[in-house]
Amino acid sequence: MLAGITDESLPLELTTVEELIGLDNAKLFELEQHRTALRDFQTDKPNVYKENQVIPVRTLRHLGHGGWAQVDCVENAVTGAQMARKRFRLKRTQAKKLKQSFETEIASLKKLNGHQHIIRYLYSYETEQTLNILLSPVANCNLYEYLEEEEYEHELGNRNDILIQSLGCLASALAFMHQHRIRHKDVKSQNVLLYQHDGTTRIIVTDFGISFDFSSKDNSVTEGATHKTRKYCSPEVARDSPRGRKSDVYSLGCIYLEILTVLS
Image (tube, rainbow, N blue to C red; front, top):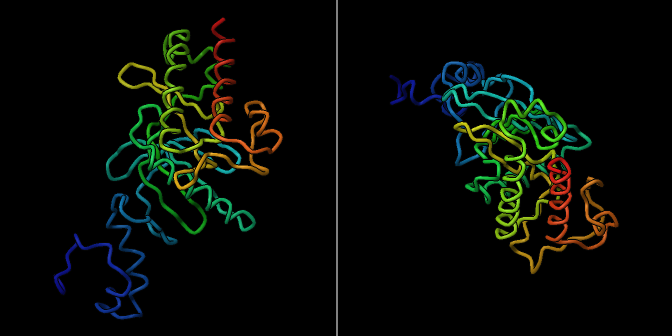
């Protein structure tokens, strides 16, 4: 034991290592220590990993991808818990936009954590080339896939029962968002997930990358050009006209129409 430092003190800051073993060996030690001192993610400050530092996750399988991000099922190497990792790969021309989407999603999810029909934020971490959000639970499929593929009925249970149940679940989630002054802005069936928990199929809303927190505003209205999914967007969004919470409700109505079409 040197200067009161033990294995439990790892990982050490570079300045501390320099004081103990000198500048020549400090940088190598500072990197290598992470291989022997695997630590879980911190929730109280950003998790930033340098090149060669070991990140406490193991990738298990690919789940899907969207316009800006890919989603994988990963395992926490410390606790063994499975999580969904949403990963943004930083590109020089889009770095600012991706960082903004990353920060927006984290802020909205933290504010909405706790609702049973909204995906739960766990941790986030950054590397030199990626931005990563760790979420729970890991879904079986999204609603779009569930409506298109009958095979999921064997996996998740009676289709009619689940779809009827989903109507109330989605309304509850959207009402909770709006009560907490968050507009989702991209409500669509691909952003609704289904997963099994204790033998019951549950419904959750995900993807808050372009959401809008209007807590500090007088109302929820925004205007100007925006990202949109035309199949689900309201007329005012399609025209790039001023729009507010009602545009989320319109998009939810489009999902309801898809559900009712399958039910009928």
